[in-house]
Image 1 (cartoon, rainbow, N blue to C red):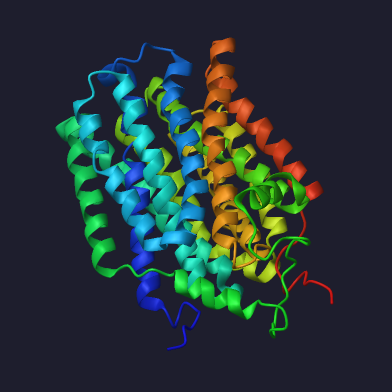
Image 2 (cartoon, rainbow, N blue to C red):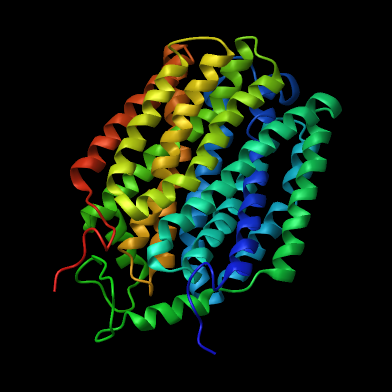
Length: 428
């Protein structure tokens, strides 16, 4: 039977994959409000130990970046579903480790497992949706994917704040985490299909001499079956467009590292209650997630380049605004501005990479892009931790991130180009 591409033709599987990425978001989101805010009182982190506080996100970023790279290549050999299952199995010990943790080192170790989980699972939910949908649906597909994931992140931050207030941080995270991860394993085993056959069917249509309605601007001089080294160098520096996208992906994670590490601590130290901290950070996640229903589809119409560049700059403006005013309303609006900037750039950086990556090696290309992107967690968390440490002021971390976003957006504007095949097709 011929495999058909498109959301409508594969709606059941598409919805199963959306549920999966929601659960992926819930898994990472359970660590993003309670754990940093209560690092001092519940996990023994000394006050103003900025670098130590950042350590768990540094570990997460380094591990997740590597696992994104591994997941892309592995999925082209063993299939998408097997990699997804591996990711959920790795996640099982995480809530137990946080519940038991006698010190902060256990939290860091649990976050290493979280990085493996996220690298394997989030990569596969994204790649699987791209496998079964059409090229002209790519922005919408990635917008829906990131919408589901980051709504999950926001919901988990709010729900775990309430659970921690009522039952204690450790017990609340234990119950929430086991319920989410157990559900994900069951649903993956029962209902998720392997989508690698769809990717192979699409690749066959792009063989030389085949008819194509849209002609993407694939990089020149790439092997039919490129090695890992070839794709890595292509993504990292040989193609300036892919390099510009990769560096933008890396730097935009500075914002998320800041939100994860310092937003809860900064707001908690300003006297904001734990539940209100959850809601302010939730505004960032909800705006980011919800707006992607619009911004992903928008890029299918107006292109990727403009939303990506303006998204970088808007994120930087929202981060700077956090330290330029005060009050719950001000901080919520500032978080929302950063969230909308992320919504403009997040699905569309990935869509731009997918536009100009051949389906025969797209899984690897997305994995390498996600390697650089999530390495930004580690580099960003280390940078903002050092900025706060050497100045003695947490606000320095906010300015480090804001300046980085404006500079990276400028690099993307200068070296990047429109990648949508309809708006900038290949010649000949």
